[in-house]
Length: 260
Image 1 (cartoon, rainbow, N blue to C red):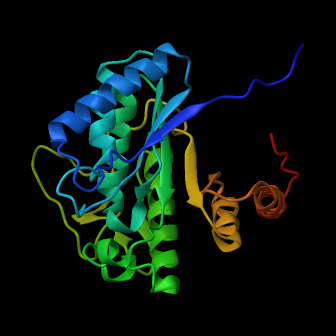
Image 2: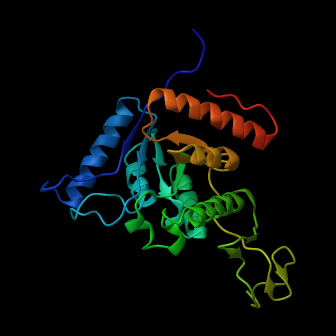
């Protein structure tokens, strides 16, 4: 029979339970074994969360991109995903660079997940607007970072002007005898665009996802053209949110969007 096959993936945050006498090295080694086994069993992907300041001293993944490089080196087929990189905690250029490097290292096995964050005590340590209690600022920061990352990946040279970030930074100049004048990215000595390397292995970029848990987040994902990862909803609610996603994305793209 024809039709699509259901795909399965594994998700982990490498969390440690209270009182668990396990070292960080031991937890990471367990994850390596789980990932190799998941590939052998035919799992499509391994997804890694991002959390900081674990109360038990071990566990959590502060950098799912870096850990993904380790897991990719031990496997050949399973896709390596982040669910999610908490975008407001990252500088957008570094985020785009790190993911692009991983995508090239893996030969195009990367899935990219973005999230807004749920714990205020984490977010406020990285950026004033990363605190999810500052909902309007958090959402604006998230949207800008996703837009910047996509601009970097889909353009040889890019520029961006937003509420939180402007690239190139104001009054950026560059002058060096080894670099002759180039009107693509300079106006005299004034830098007008930036070239970020490497570009991703997958073109135009790896699949991009967003973790969603509310109707408003579903709407954001659809407006930005991100695939939606529905976080622990009941079956009836997920169906309604999938329908909302299709409705909003169809409107955003100006053409019917089909689920499945």
